[in-house]
Length: 111
Length: 110
Image 1 (tube, chains in turn orange, red):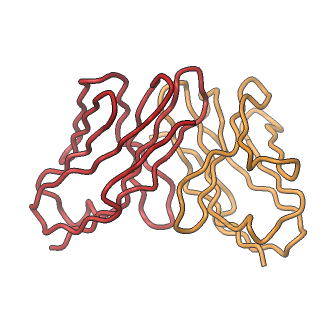
Image 2: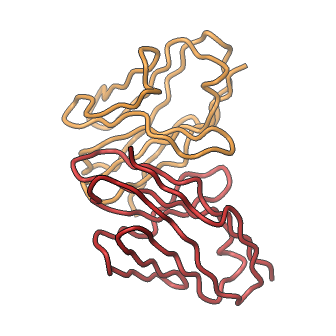
């Protein structure tokens, strides 16, 4: 069964450092998303991406965040200057338009 | 703003003891209601999508139903491997994102 692949599975970074989280969506999907889940809290929407541009973003997705689809297969989330409160599980998801498939996530720990 | 409320927060069941989880929602025009299963440290795993009131879907011991205000996930004769957090999410018409509830953590004891 096709799956969404995320790397790394766990990343530890120092406050103020830049991190890039990587995702390989399902190959024939057209819609791509990033969500995050702070420990013990709800899964929260960050951003959606379609046709090589951001289609929707949440209040969380401020100027510190950016997304990119650098080639035909990868989809990345960059956090420019990490804060302690950015520590969370980050999930990538892709969709053909009906239903989403989520990756296993990257656990980001900011120290 | 879309709102999703799940109850109960936690449910402890004996193996074979059937029960139901509730998801109440408020959305400006429902495009779809989604149920996911999430194991600790993992991503949400898709279970069902429901699109209109009266719709029902089944998969093994799970059955999801939908009304205009809520959805139920029925677990029939659960087994320990059904232990997980079950998440409900809604997508509004014309919207891209899913809005999630906080989940119900189900523990099934042998």
